[in-house]
Length: 314
Image (cartoon, one colour):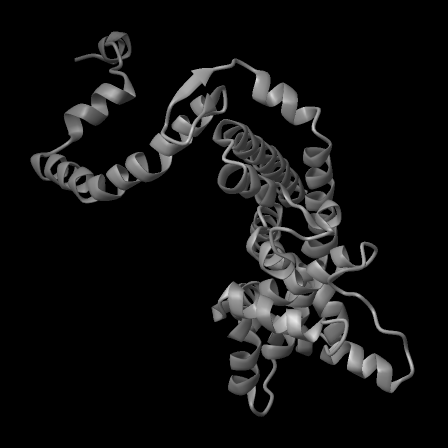
């Protein structure tokens, strides 16, 4: 065959070439691969995707206690965005996000850097700092309720020792949001610290050896070498902290209870969903709240991912 014949011969599409190139062994591997992921795929469909689409459907209905529903179109969403309680929950949730997420990220990084040093008793410090991550939220709330009690709490006892007035950590409307933020930060730092510690230990030691040979100080090396290499891990911690705080429920509910006098200052979106679903039994309205939580979380998370990609490209 001449060169011109070869040039004139039609080229097969890449997809057809790939299909023809699959051997019997590759086809069997692909088949068994699908078989292996079928249990997980079935679990996702049954326990995640199906309830999600059911929830979206129910958000357009007036759902009763025995799954009896009537379609009411967009009434749930119209009522939701005109609800003062919902606006208050949005404000409180975003306040928790803007207060807690930066502090969680910074403190977790500082603790991870400290635990990455060769210090005596390192294993003990790591164990003690990781304890909040494996402690039940109910236990955390009970301990902090005792610490923040206005009459006999340890924190107010310390303030009294210095002749300072007692503070209503769980009852003063001007303070309760900061009190909840303190507990959220304390309980969230441990896991983020471990993730960042793993990221720090993944940086090759040869880089630091070269840095010391070049006479670069540790502070300059942190800003010029460590921090840029930690950006992917930091961004991951930032995203999961953001999602967790945006959906916070257990700490607020356990600290203040379901009949608190400071609901306007502590109510979160997830707490509002629980209130309408299981206290007021307005499940259609609660479904609309759940959809709004999902949309807000998805939009803001995608925005963070976009910003992270732009920073990485730069």
